[in-house]
Image: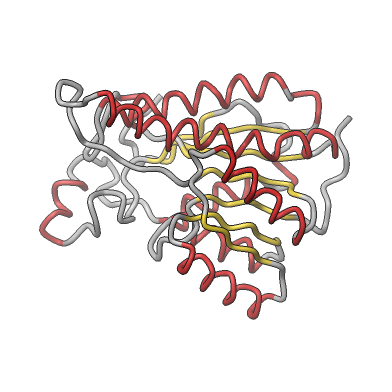
Length: 256
């Protein structure tokens, strides 16, 4: 049975440290709205600086942990740290991941497994760590970042391994959504196209901008705040009837 949406709520965000990333922007957006936050990043110094800033500015509880999301034991330890210090987890937002533009022909097994392990397995492990608690409490939200590459087979800075990892996230999301549909927990994916972050081989400088925007019908890059606004809606109280969906946010790069 679905329970009432709580006032005192916590969101777990992976990939929250990058100064120009979606995760950091989302943490700032949710912190302003009174969410308590569990932040996961490989660079814990960046995540801790953000945690300190948000706690002081918004009088919320924020815990930052350095975690390899592809390591089940590390994810479990992070979950325990969050559960000791924060209110119950209402939302899990899986943003952390790596890109890879290596062609299929040039991708060896080690590279393939690294991309899949971080992007797909990492999303699985973090989601699974907090799922039981959300089901038990009768309410929860899971949002995972896919990519337009999952639909097109690759993109401007990605190829087969990356596309496969993001397609796996979408398949897992649909399966999870069906499994927990009657528990009050929803699961959705977001598929962005080119967002102005550093995952595209670093900052998109003016000399690279034309290459990227030429592939976008709207003629501009997407912004991190546009993605985080969509995440905020999907983990909010009005989104309880949306589950198993992949929501495109791609400037018209792929329509349908």
